[in-house]
Image (cartoon, rainbow, N blue to C red; front, side, top):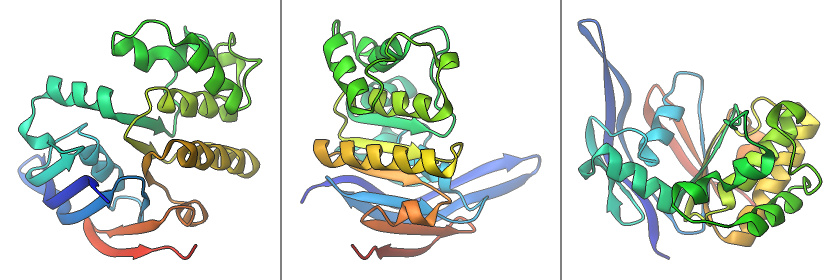
Length: 228
């Protein structure tokens, strides 16, 4: 199976006054197309920083990141943004819906950023799949947290991304709502065959994925397969 994501000796450092802080230290791994992987570890271990590097939201201080056959650290910011729009989907802990747009309009945003007109029926179909077929004209303020995250899931899948990055997708939800969102996320992921990389503190959620990568102190502490 072909690789969709590869990191080779990736480190990330930040300047803090006269000090230099190493957030990630010499991380290497690969992810194959269609696989799912969780990134876990204590707060401050570098999980979200690593996810951002994988998605091309930032570039490493050293090492290489290759996504969908494209070396991200060789691209400028505009080219990385174009690459994300073509190949990547995102789900965030705080939903990141635009408050002035309806659920339907929020789901269609990625297509509009590509310059693609239409897509209304596809967006409606995705909203129906996540159980919000009758809420398409509602604004985020009229939706519960769980409903907003379901809109975000529909938005993430509308471009049929090659890889989906999820940062604490159930972190702001109660246990029952989190289970509903988890079931929807993995159902849509199986149906689409999308590669999934997610950051989570929730080990129960992590065990839904094929593989768990554990960070400690910015280093790769463990990389193990889950028992299905």
